[in-house]
Image 1 (tube, rainbow, N blue to C red):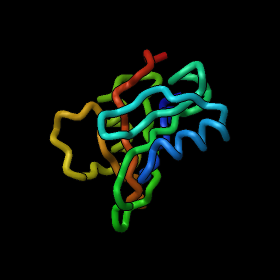
Image 2 (image 1 turned 135 degrees about the vertical axis):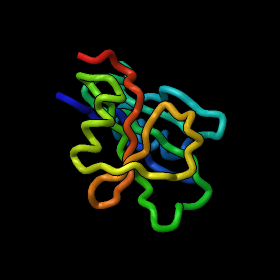
Image 3 (image 1 turned 120 degrees about the horizontal axis):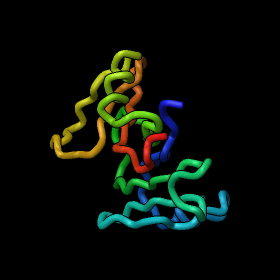
Image 4 (image 1 turned 90 degrees about the vertical axis):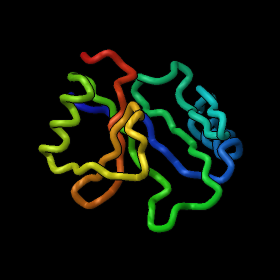
Length: 126
């Protein structure tokens, strides 16, 4: 396996409300909170299990022309740089959404222009 869905990112106005809802629906727990009110929820065993986590990204308003949901992937059998090269060969393109260059992830677009992120591995490669 080369990648796994690590987390699904959902833009929302009130992460607390959605966290309570999705924790009940999926039997998830709160795994972390960010200073801006964003939250990550997931299975009780935490990140890295068979289910992806759900990152509730606080946004006052939906970004025009942008989906409120995007996928984050993690490389599982190679390092991030090698996986980035592979994804670009497969047709992904870099996306500029105002990154500083200091992020630990790469923002990419699939061949149809849907944004997704390649995260720095939170799991040891297999």
